[in-house]
Image (cartoon, rainbow, N blue to C red):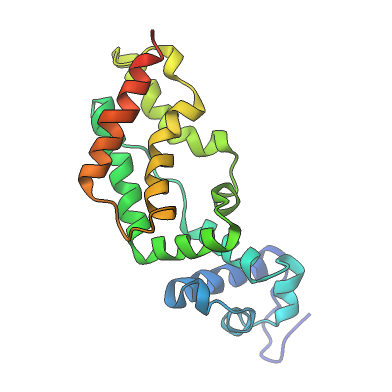
Length: 194
């Protein structure tokens, strides 16, 4: 099918990609509060029906757009478990404190705190970077293989998330991150080998 300008009409994956990019742009520009189906449709050069065929509501579209933004990054490899864990928490803290983090916090509030829904990953997949860090620590002799468990691996991140969600802080102070690692995470890892 041809449009008035003679270009092929976008369909399927091409249209979905255009819509998601428009939603990403709108989300970055206006936050979740400013994300509307009308604005995204205009920006994508399509109609709202095309959006609603793919995403039933604004929240679903916002989550899909956030997933586009929040691609997984490689875990740090500083040479020590302590420094790797601190760097992971510092990265997360910077992200949660950034404008994109504000969008994440808005979406978390809208989903009732369902982080897996935002990243479209299982709990095990969310633990992957932490399991990589622990795997490296095991290879270096800093931890025993018994420490390699998804719940153990992610406890530091859960505690940081708790700082943002339950305490409502705009950013966690670095001493809180150090406390999470030194007083909870590392002792938990060490105790798994007993």
